[in-house]
Image (cartoon, rainbow, N blue to C red):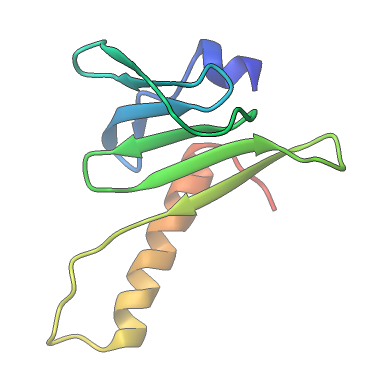
Length: 106
């Protein structure tokens, strides 16, 4: 967690990180302007990185094991002409690319 705080990712999934929520420091950083605002949520050792397209990666230490847990949420444009399974596959592919980029292993 210290490494992610010292050197946060500048991009995720090929898109710039625009906001970082640090629940331990209880602040939100607007990466583009450098401005910081208080984060009014419970204090916890969690970081969230948000990109311009709404992708969100949350990082926190495990409460029971010596490892870090990652939660990846992605967004995509709905295509009414494509099947649901096809669109879900595209989102799964995006998650896999992000996991590879961040060197996350299962």
